[in-house]
Amino acid sequence: MIVQLHKYLLLGPKKEMDRFFALAQRAGFMEFIGLSHKKALDMPKDAKTILSAIKIARMHTTSSSESYETTLHPLALSQQIVQWNEELERLIEEKRVLQAEIARIAAFGNFSKQDIETIYREGKRVMQFFCMKSDLMQKMPLPPEVIYIGREYDLAYFLSIAKEPMKYPKMIEILIDRPVGELRERLKSCDQEILHVEKEIHESASALPYLQNGLLDDLNAYDLNLAKHDASSPLDDLFAIEAWVPKTKLKSLQGLLSRLDIHAEEIAIEKKDKIPTCQENKGVGKLGEDLVHVYDTPAWTDKDPSLWVLVFFALFFSMIIADAGYGLIYLLIGLFLKWKMKRAGGAIRRFIKLILILSTCCIVWGVMTASFFGMEIGPNNPYRRFSFLHYLATQKAEYHLEKKDDVYQEYVARFPKAAEAKNGHAFLVNTEHTVDGKVVYEGLSDFYDSILLELSLFVGMVHISLSFCRYM
Image (cartoon, rainbow, N blue to C red; front, top):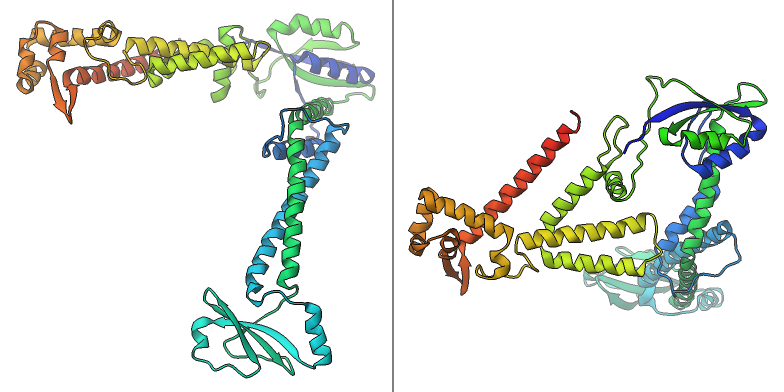
């Protein structure tokens, strides 16, 4: 149900403020309204760091099922994970650059940069590296100081040994800072460093629950500071703040304030106030509330749609699946989770209950429509003959059989054997014919499809009509 909210003004000495907000946060039934008009507090950097570490940890699989043991504070561990991730990104980028550089100069092979400098210093010769389009090489004679090295893809590579730096038409000089051998050594080292950093991040990924608890503590402290920040100070020694309190928690408010030197006074709700919605449900209604929050939160003036949503969600889900076999699988999964997670509470326990409800509805609807793992069940099979869908189809067929209307005439014209039928079941069965070696009961299939369509439209109309009736 949606609980009515009351607006309260809370006044007290500043010395009681920290204790009051700590108790209010623990109780968790008040929503504070800021009076100070101060600039909103930004999320603390520590929380952002832990959040970044959690995102990184989720992207890496844990190396073992054992929990991650560490003496580090969640913030320190988060900073370490973030640093590792930055180092990993840097190494991956360096590896990409190295691979591109190796591909660019691989044609010249491995050589010593020091030998080139020695040749320049003692032999007075300048060594330069060039490349050009392969098809242009055939049209251009090479100077005597230019040596052809090789060809890769559509480029030809050359080495020039001249007395002074040269430039050649149609050729592009290639500047080489480090030879291929040195680049490959660094690439090998880079791969080893990447493996080491990835191992550290993979191992730290098992600390995800530890980091989440650390983030929760930081966010709780942030919310507490945010509430304190919203409190105004009409006098130097006093603080004041407004809060929304559910009608069902008024006694709890008095009990909380009985231990504090703080006064609460109910005040009028102004037109400009944005009244929040407080939903309180138990049992099955809580399952519907979870579904409601998936879509949206209803207005405080609305009626609680939790049970309404649960009933029609289960109905529509079963109509979509429309198979008792799949419903049985869902039921087994739900029972397994219930057995495996006996101590689960809160949202997980409610989710398991929802699975059991949906699976049961799927089984019921599947039995009503004689559908089991999509298997073709013969029209004379007891499972099909006693299904609700077949009952409706035979009743509809008997109506046409009695009236001898245009539907009856159409089927008799196509399937003369249908005229011999004495009841609706026989009429539908006598519309059989063979398609690609497979027996098809066309009348039965047509009647089933039309009835399912009509049922879907009828349920949809009832759902919409009743939803409007809720406001009457």
